[in-house]
Image 1: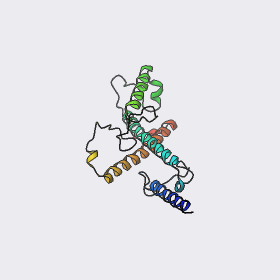
Image 2: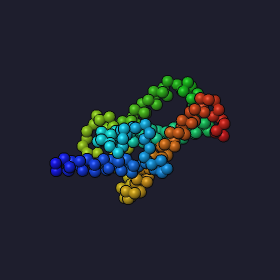
Image 3: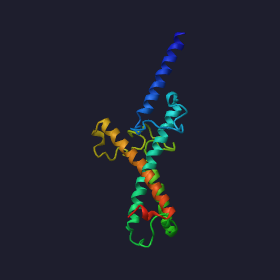
Image 4: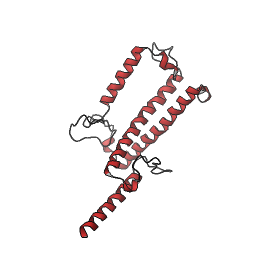
Length: 197
């Protein structure tokens, strides 16, 4: 009786905590709030399990990483479309046309660079793919790659300031993902000149 009631109360509190925490997560912002129409965070966020929360954190990290890559992609697309090139690559076109024009050695360098960036730009205490266990992570959040090396005043700021900056980065990444998708679609349709000067 009493044990079952205490367990039920504990489970109810945990469900409320999980429900509230999903809706208060960074990225759950006005006007949509917590939006998960496809159920990526479990069938019911109100009754999310511990596994659902772990999966939510993993997917948030993936969203952050894709947003960072998309921001670089948008800038890279716009810069090359404007005609800026590295020395020796003046004849390489912009957009998808560049894929066929790149020499094999450039592809090899790009793949090596991506591999090095993937290895270096991670929490050096906990690798994303679980191959390293160097103790407790010193990162503030998944995606914090300072590794106690660079600070720029981050540690001296308030938690509200940090959360606001993280939310800004997440939203800019979301916008960049839509932006690069739009650029790619218009490039393939052949009307990129209609949207870029």
